[in-house]
Image (cartoon, rainbow, N blue to C red; front, side, top):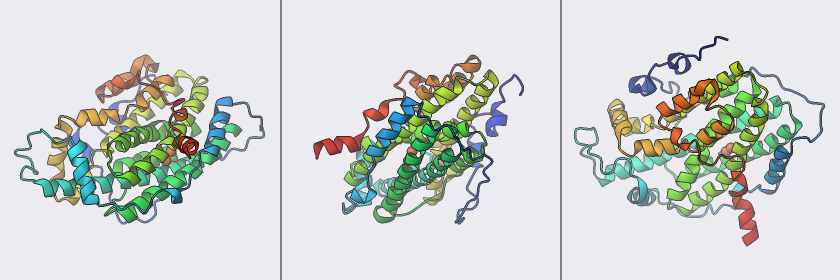
Length: 374
Ligand SMILES: [Fe+2]
Ligand SMILES: [Fe+2]
């Protein structure tokens, strides 16, 4: 490969990461699609080496076996009044537009009713995207079972497949029985999941899914779990989070070993992939489909959103697990700090020294905690 990193234009299809028109030009063009096929280019690998040589993966596998939970055991009979929850959440934490002068914007005349409706749609949208992302994790992890050449990793990944099936199950059930509508997959998320699944290199599945998508999901779940006033969702997120912390650890532990033997050129490709994934995930969080459904001018509102005073804080917070994990894997500083520069442009570099997720799962094991109490 060439010695220069590829340009932002080559990597994400636009020269400026904040080009709103280019971001919004990517939309889901087939919202009625029922099935979506992605061609898989990787080999399924048998290993005849059954020796259990990877202690950290073995430990994760043991933990996963004793931390299983049953979706049916969540308190599904909890009544959820979505409008009330939306109102309570708004008062408590829906700060993105509060204290921001909306004069001259498409929402300048909005009153409490419109904002509650926005909160409801935003929640339907957010949980729908989690649901689709969880299915992406299910597929990617099943793929890792096939493609990873290490027996300890195949064992562990098999437990993650069960975890992800359970996550798809709980988000689908919550959406169907407690909320008021689904959204199709966001085009930026879809593009990212397709890229991860189509990549022939097994470690790229880990980087895309375990480090980037699940790193972001873990941060988002932790945030939502703190913020929500709804007890069923709180419990659901608490359990999902404890699984996700293991999944991210699986990525960190596996890639630490694998990256130590890669060439500089190969590491640079991983940096580029991490950057592409970060941009796609940032773009997906703009919630363009929510404004569309509310009949508001999407372009104008995304401009407003991107300039909202609290937006950068919320957005950056989503990267609070990804950045330290990339640093631990050596991706931030390789190639003269190329990824460090990109994360600086995205406004998320300040998390580099936050705790990485290599061992966080031990503190987040909610299932074990509940069993000790019972
Ligand atoms: Fe998951
Ligand atoms: Fe996961």
